[in-house]
Image 1 (cartoon, rainbow over the protein chains, first blue to last red):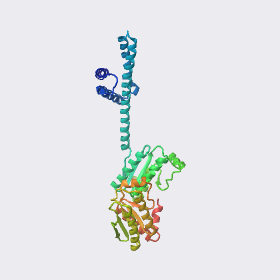
Image 2 (cartoon, chains in turn blue, red):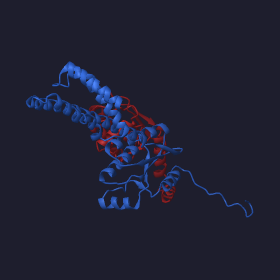
Image 3 (cartoon, rainbow over the protein chains, first blue to last red):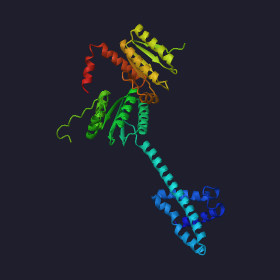
Image 4 (cartoon, chains in turn green, red):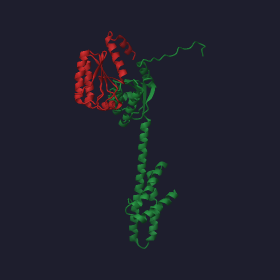
Amino acid sequence: MSRQSREFMQLLTTAVNDGGIDDINSAAWASTRDFLADFSSSRVRAGYSSSETATFIFSLKHPLFSALRREFEADPQALADTVVSASQLLDKLGLLTTESFQKTREEIISRQQQELLELSTPVVRLWDNILALPLIGTLDSARTQIVMQNLLDAIVQTRSDYAIIDITGVPVVDTLVAQHLLKTVAAARLMGADCLISGIRPQIAQTIIHLGVDLTAVTTKATLADAFAVALRRSGHSLVKDEPRQAGGR
Amino acid sequence: MERIPILKMGRFLLVTIQVDMHDRLALALQDDLTSQIVKWKARGVLIDISALEMVDSFIGRMLGTIASMARLLDSDTVVVGMQPSVAITLVELGLSLKGIRTALDVEKGMAALQDAAAGSDGNLSGADRDENSQF
């Protein structure tokens, strides 16, 4: 922290000497600007708030103004002018800090969004010709695109006939989400795969009906297990439970 | 004029679209296919669009019309080998080809056609109905 302050004071002095205090976008200020950008992004990662980061600059005001007051004790007019311009300079630097703070934070958010998109749409192969697509989180248009693409690619790759979309992890189903689901089902059907929707919770069943969404064209099941059983049966498999062993067998 | 070949395979017709469909070609295909269905008394039509990289609303609608025409002439239509990107485009265009059967590839499409033909040839598909009632 004190090392950073020293470094900043050094850079600031050089910049003021070389480039003056009017334009902080000039070349003389470049190293100061870079320093502040680095400083802000390291503060973002360390979990500081934006006002805490800007205080790094603004805390300079008090000692600077006291020094100026001592310097210009005889000339109040000059003191006022210098204080105004020094204050303007520090404000600009402070704003720069906040701006880079925000930029770093936005970068982090968008990267996380991307990662979330990639992580949250796995396509699982349950059996020969049967795929499952467990959806977790809200479905927006961007995610639907990725889900659809992943599902269709997986259908081609595994030559599957059945795809089960499990929406247990989808918190809310509104008309838009339902429409996205129907689109995915229609696209899978165009590829020649049959789509089943499973994991419809009681509240969601109520919402869907209240909204007047028509899901009658799609086979829906309450649980993934039920849907899997249907898919197995349709693809000609049968589930047989072993005969219970004779008494004393175990 | 360039035409899309229609191959006869037993009781079924096989149409493989290998070139970029443009509107006149699509209309010619409609003409040819309907006359061939009547000529060979075809029970099913299999349209392979695995080489089709792009579709527009006209081609999408044309696939639908061909299927309805074939249906009118008592033959089933199966569209096979649709590319994922094509499927997404069609859905985004709002064309989900409701009346058409689809399959992943020619092999599965043929099996579907044979199933359908066997079902309608038998005495009102008694076996078929049994199978359905399980679900």
